[in-house]
Image 1 (cartoon, rainbow, N blue to C red):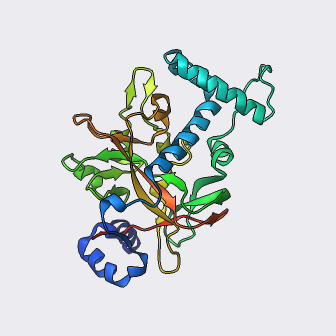
Image 2 (cartoon, rainbow, N blue to C red):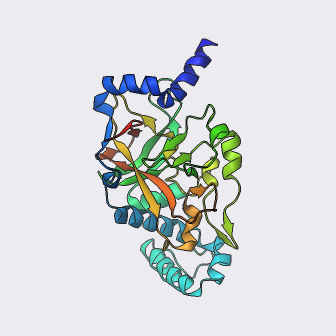
Length: 291
């Protein structure tokens, strides 16, 4: 009984205001200070955009054989991807005339081939922390997008009370926007309302499963830093621009709760604060002080 209460407290305490106020004074070294919301950028939005574009294009090409319905409606885009596919096949020395055609990699292999590293979920190195996120292959330079925080995006006025009960996976953006990254219960059901426009899948649902289509969508499992394990990544908010390629939106692990208001999709990425080597666990900072 006491063990279960302690487990629930560890999950909930970051949302308990008196506890936060006390610990902000005690753990100043682990705080994330943001002088202004406009300055909450470790890297430029353009760099985030280019990283996602590069990764999603590689995933799309790797899964080219299953994109027929989309490409049939986008002939110009199809030509561009055929050129990219041909170049990729030459780079990998794959015979394009072979009936076996394209060599298909796992999403984690695509990530490694594209960005030079792979990340995945595993048991955390912290005692009683549950799941964590590790660099399983390669090397991640400082200032790199290393993961994304998936989930349903709620604006300030939208209902999230019942989804928030006992939920340690709710991320609060600086402007009050909330992202529910819980892959279970009511949160899962809300996200599972497939966001689709005709043949175009407008979001990635695979982060709710053990088989990820977008291998970056593990950010909700990154654990909080401590005095012994300092933060090596931090959160950065990113609004997906309107010109984001429609065929690549199937890899975005976020949906808006309601389409009543026209706005850009809010995403949160995790950016490295230092170089991170293979085998290291990712640690973020749950505290944000806006001054």
